[in-house]
Image 1 (cartoon, helix red, strand yellow):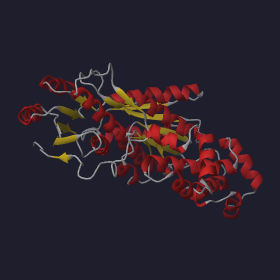
Image 2: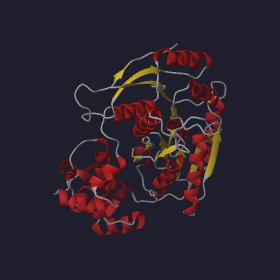
Image 3: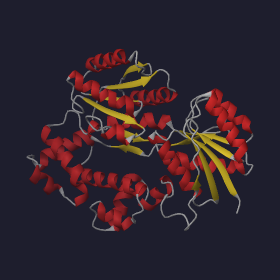
Image 4: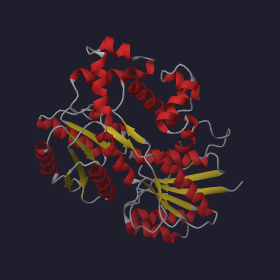
Length: 405
């Protein structure tokens, strides 16, 4: 069988690129024999030159690259082999598979709107293309809901201006009306915003609810307050990049523009675990429902744990969320089910039981009423094929590493 020889230029210190690699391998397991060489960085002329020599010497047939330098990207396209880039760099010559940043910005706005907030802010970087696209979609979605948005655009950090950037962020956060929902264009900035809130005496999420993007788990979980973040579906980006490269190697034409991959959803953590203008006992009830919905609880279990009457809870949830207590419990169960459908190989029956449903039939009926499709349809549409268990024995692609320093 013909072996495809591929060069990967991905900075695997990035959680995004590790997920992209996962998706690449997922595609390759069921599409013939693939052999890989790997370079950590090609962001200098010297390293890109070494990579170019390696490509010719090893008979490389295609390249997948995450690189923000348009000049070096242009040089790679002159090597005579197909190149697919996954950085999202606008205006670059090779075909690309990119995050749908418009969908990311809209999803961040919708998530914060669902928290009952009426004041919003955005933190971006002046030098980042993703930042601008996410800002436009975020503010446009808020405008459609009748909500204004304060914007802070910072230069990308460097040691000599770090103190000035931190001061600007603290001053800006203090100036915003409270409570406020803030979207930081990616998780590093979201973590810095949480630190700035702590140094300013602002509570997260009570005063400032913070959501980031890219779902870098280390950045999110190690933050003083764990950060909610949008999963940009980097595994799917890797899968689509490998599929596109496979098509190009076979001689097919590249698409007219980049392939856009929609985000998977918001991964909820404590930084947005709040409802604006909610009574303390209602917040406790919501937290209890989120933490225990999958245990098969009912409304009476909530009332036994929280000092609130059924009537008050019904009125408050209707006012804040437009849902009854029972509907909210089902909403929480379905949110967990979505994560299990996308992230595991569990059967629909096993997921139903894990999420507190008495039967798969009831689970499917509730799921379709809330999501608009059955669990099986949702999984088939949104999930990348599993990396584990999908390849025949002995067919896992070989990876050869060549890190140029």
